[in-house]
Amino acid sequence: MKKYFVIGNPINHSLSPKLQNRWLKENNIDATYDKIKLEDHEINDFIKDIKKQKIAGCNVTVPFKKKVIPFLDKLSQEAEKTQSVNTIIFDKGDLVGHNTDISGFNAAIKKLNFKIKGKKILILGAGGVVPSIIFALKNMHVQEIIITNRTREKAENLKFLFNNLKVLEWGDLTDFHMVINATSLGLNNETINLDFSSLGHDKLFYDIIYNPQETPFLKMGKQLGNTTENGKTMFVYQALEAFKLWHNMVPKVNTDTFKLLDND
Ligand code: ATR
Image: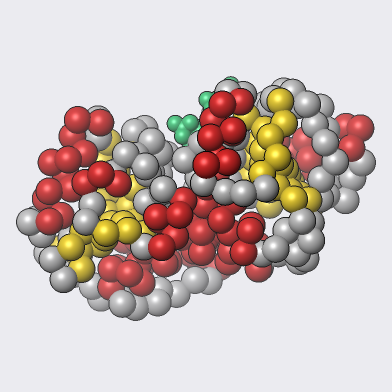
């Protein structure tokens, strides 16, 4: 039986096994999908097992999306550009790293009633998922991307990957049409210490976090009269793209798919 995994640290919160196992069952694929917590020094051996086909493939989450790259043979164009891999496949003897976070974010934005072209976007955070968001936003022809991160240097480093980014000191704010929380603040109900109250309403507050469904950041955005959206659709569609890469099939996405992820 083929074995798939999602690797990360921490990994307990991941809902990937729930979703992937549902789709495996629905499509009568004889395979399993589990989560596994790894330490840095264990990545190499784990990935060697994919090369030996003891493991069929894996998803990669925080903090390994960049760290897995040296152990792979090839990268997709998106993974190369973002230096971020969230899906590993075995293809004709090669270990190939893909980035499906980008298409996940694309799909999520397309499903919103929000014309993103020409808009000003503020991103909070500069961690693992941010290069994928910037890549997607650039393809959507947004007007401006502004990054603010507690550790300013990490935001500045994104300029090595992308042109025309503006970096703002953590704590400072500027006007925007859409703000994206890409920090880990909210995973455990933490608030974000930024004051959005003077910036007006009718903006889009988007959180990459999907579990819990409504972070304090989204609650605050709603209270101030803005539209809000969590990261669930992005999560489902990045998973769908990974499923397609491994199994050459498009799994079903319907209200049940989303309900499955509601029990948090
Ligand atoms: P990594 O930084 O290892 O890629 P991540 O979960 O992808 O991990 O990113 C965490 C993000 O949340 C980072 O932008 C981090 O800011 P720093 O780069 O300064 O660490 C941000 N973050 C985490 N805790 C935070 C806090 N208490 N206040 C502000 N930002 C925080």
